[in-house]
Length: 77
Image (cartoon, rainbow, N blue to C red):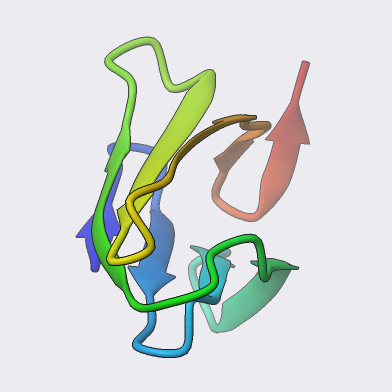
């Protein structure tokens, strides 16, 4: 599980799923679900510019996703 400076939480799961949430100051809101890995997600990180989410899995695959920036639950362009 990682959290970036914009209150975005990302969790990699044993089944290969990646869940992304944001916090709007009152509650946690789901943003996305990705199921690209065939085995457990072993590592996840958000790039320093907050534009990319990178994941690695036990399936020996690495994925790089474009990542929207959310600040307090609101999408920033």
